[in-house]
Image 1 (cartoon, one colour):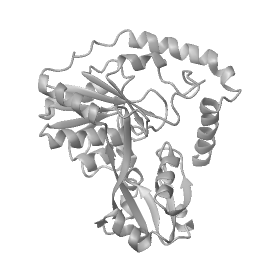
Image 2 (cartoon, one colour):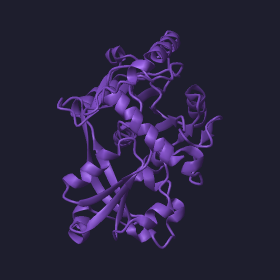
Image 3 (cartoon, one colour):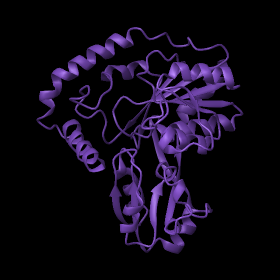
Amino acid sequence: MTAFRASLERLLHRIWYDNHWLTWFLIPLSRLVEWEVARRASRRPPKGATPSGVAVWVVGGLTVGGTGKTPVLIALGEWLRNRSVSIGVISRGYRGRLGKEVHVISGADSAEAVGDEPLEIRHRLNCPVIICRDRVQALRVMVEQFDVDVVLSDDGLQHYRLPRDLEVVVLDAQRGLGNGRIIPAGPLREPASRLALVDWVLERNSRDRDRCFEYQVASMRQLSSGRSISWAEWCAQWGRQPITAMTALGQPGQFFEMLVERGLDVTPISLPDHAAISQELLEKATTDRVLITSKDAVKLEAMRGNEMAHRIWVVEIETRLPTALLSRLAQTLATN
């Protein structure tokens, strides 16, 4: 199944971003999707129709696949928390067993149950995180059970019934909007004209300073011991040795390129988005150290006592957001 998913993702990438001839056969289906999107969007509530005393900020995507929404949401959550704003997060819980009904994530939950990204968010922000396919219900429970000032929605831009005060769209500057078509003929979840209606557009490594967000390596964490060291310290000890980098990100190339740009000799191994790194795959790694992302790490908690876990290091990143966006958000908070 993993191999099939990987092959399908590669094919879709060619169709959406390399102007593959198959896109023309999918356009009739895209017309149907676009009609349904327009029908549902016409019923969305106006901005600001959120529960009294709570602001809802949606961090979403216009394209299918990984663009960096979760790192951006975590960065926003940390920024809000540093301003003494109480926060909560709602999410669909994609690829988790739970989520049909409202579920408040606890420390006992696994990524298999609640999804890797919601669990990573809870670990990083230490705030209430609620998953449900119906984000309106998740928001209702968040407001009823927790005293929060701002609710961040992990994706959900197209969950039109969800009331919101502010929308931030996250794109990848390199990929852009692909061929500009609606799924399945292209990568768009909505027409490109939707960008004119959101409050802010962010692009990873954009040339536009007001849109640009970028990743920085904050520290390195050994999976087995949990100890963290600085990037400089890690490189001083092992930076000249060959390493294996594994990840199940939506755009794994970003992770590999970041490591190569920092001078590492990398053997890259990518998995389909949200897949779990298996013990069998780790055993095949021939290097003494294996680097993974924090999104991958939440799916490997059960392996912390495994004899191989000492080889695994988690690359902890921080996301730098543009000053213009943070100034705009500070003004928004001040007026609410």
